[in-house]
Length: 146
Image (cartoon, rainbow, N blue to C red; front, side, top):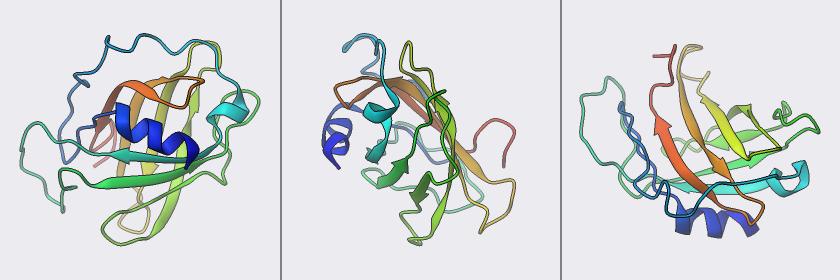
């Protein structure tokens, strides 16, 4: 949770069948180099919806918190032990993706196989060694998913 508090206070995300860039992008600057140890841990994401679009499933509510545990390997990819908790059901689901260690560029895929194998959300942003993410965008559904 050490990084989670900083992340929650600096990131605004968009969810629920839509995609939009974070309005904070450019305010906090780039991420720079980050180590696997700095990226590994428990993270919290607060959803801020900016547009209402039709969705075939239950959308995430504005202000909803998504918690995740990242285990980042030495090459920047997430280990299979990485996971996230669905806010509505409390189900623990797989989390995959990567962190580019030289720049902090982050691309995470929040899978939802308990619903159907083709359901997922994607989070893109820039992770900093100080425990924050800037320029975050949450896309639901992730490209190539439903």
